[in-house]
Image (tube, rainbow, N blue to C red; front, side, top):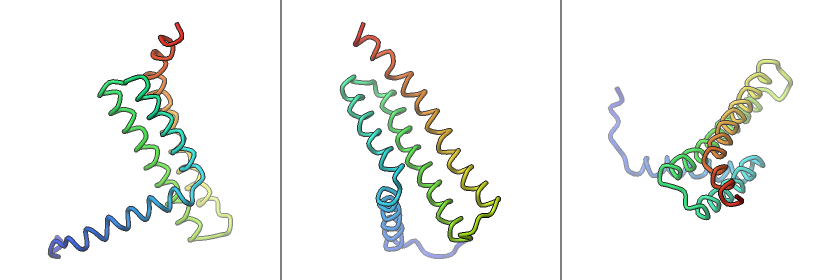
Length: 126
């Protein structure tokens, strides 16, 4: 067990580091910026269609999950690149699996989006 006393100063620093990480994600990762544009469009559609509270919960969890997955992927790629700039099959495997995890999550998010928005779009154009 850690006997270190609780420190608001250290907690504030940890939040600062986390916000720096979020900033690095959006400044340095092209896919994160694409996800951000899509998130803004989905939020606009959510407002336009006046989605329910539970649909908002699903949409916001999906948006947050995609950004978190992208951040984990970017962190794994950065660490792998630091370990070795040379090609190595295990590093390739790690990077490919991390990218695949993002893709799997995004595919699930698309299904959630279709469940929420497809009936509303059909009703709008019917």
